[in-house]
Image (tube, rainbow, N blue to C red; front, side, top):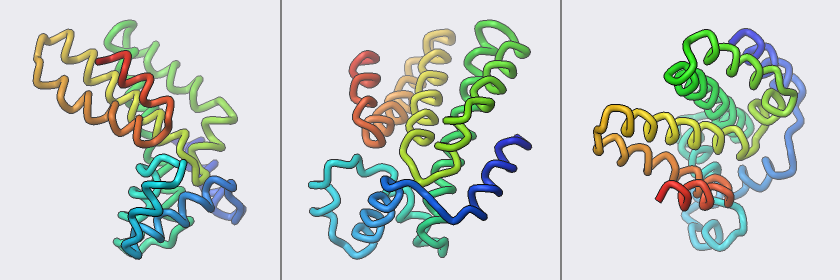
Length: 168
């Protein structure tokens, strides 16, 4: 958690973000302006711009909102992965898996930039965790939120359709 916070602090001072981030923030602004047809016709998936727009509605600036979306995705992915691996291999293994993921330069970079990677990881990891719990407990109702998160992954990145398709 400390490494994640430090990386985010450095990125926040950096003032730069990816080209995709510009696209996501532009699409978020179009959503706020009510121009949904242009957003839905754009080749980028709409989930990240939608989440940025939601945060902008609460008063955050576009760059801050975009970075918050990515950081929340990375944090969700780390926690869900730790819990998922802990279910199968023990708590220590779950913590180590999250630490290894956090040590990845791309995870830290993508998790603190305005990109769709980290939110995608978060949706997939959370959906997979809920699906595993549904199978383990034989609770069919946990399949519904798992499906919602996996569908959200498809609305975040195109490869999410593959993940959702495999589950279905």
